[in-house]
Image (cartoon, rainbow, N blue to C red; front, side):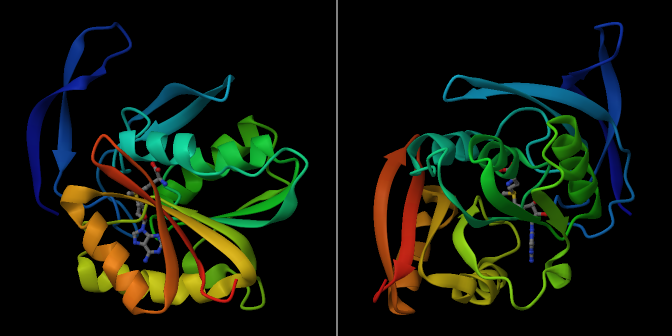
Length: 226
Ligand SMILES: C[S@@+](CC[C@H](N)C(=O)[O-])C[C@H]1O[C@@H](n2cnc3c(N)ncnc32)[C@H](O)[C@@H]1O
C-alpha cells in the first residue's frame, strides 16, 4: 500500500487539537481497505430530521455529508412517508442516503450496496443506531439476491472508478428497476454529469435533469415505457 502522511485539518483529536494522521492512496472504492480506520461522527439534517452518523477514514466524504449527496437528497423526489417498496442505495458509503430513505419511509425495504467492506460495516452500524436494521439490508453487490427488483434506485455513483466502470455499474443495476421504477442519480458536471446523461439516453433510458445546483446534476432515470 502506498501511503503518505499529511496534516489533515478536518480530523481533530479527542482533545480538540489538530492531529497528524496517516492518509493512504487507497481509493474510497477499495474492496478491503487496509489503511487506518479512524472513526468520527457527522451530523446533518434532511427535511427537519437530524442525523448523526458514524464515518471512517477510507470512505467517500468521511468528514461531512457530501455536497452532491446533499443536493440529491434535497432535489430528488424522496418518497412520502406512506410509500412502500424496495429501494436501493447504490454505492452506499457510510449510508447517508440509505439511512434517510429508511428513516423517512417506514414501509420500505432499503438495500445498501457497496464494494467497500468498511462502508458496509459503517452503514450497518448506522442502521443499528437508528433502529433501522430490520429494513435496511447492507450487502456487497454479489450478495443481493437475483430476484430482488427495485422500485427506486438512489445513487451518488462512483466517478473515480472511470467512465467504463461507471457505465458497467449502471448497466448492471438499472435493468433491475421495476417496470415503473425510477432511479435518482447525482453527478458533478465536472466529473461527467452531462456525458452520463447523454450515455443514458443513448442506452434507451428516459432521462430528466430535474435539478442543477452547485455544479451537480440530479438525473431522474426511467424506462421509456415506464
Ligand atoms: C461517490 S461515493 C457515494 C457514497 C455515499 N452514497 C455518499 O453519498 O456519501 C460512491 C460509492 O460507491 C462505491 N462503489 C464503487 N464501485 C462500486 C461498485 N462496483 N458497486 C457498488 N458500489 C461501488 C464506493 O465504494 C463508494 O462508497
